[in-house]
Length: 89
Image (cartoon, rainbow, N blue to C red; front, side, top):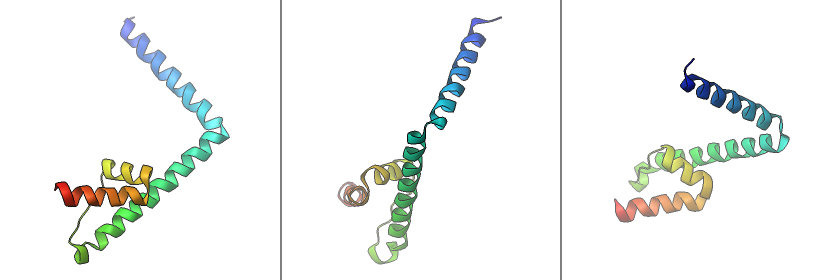
């Protein structure tokens, strides 16, 4: 048997065990649900910004980078994205 396949099997097995252990932890579940709520709120904020683009002439793409910035920073993150777009682009 090739050593490469053994290493892949160990990686996959340990990853599965880690995911199982994290899912059993209640604190991880709360953190994951909080993160999911923040992602949804950030997506709604960016979508609302794009809905108002007819009035503001400002379109913000909803991609991984903008969504992550809006998720981590909230409303100030969206304002930061708008400022960067207006100044640099």
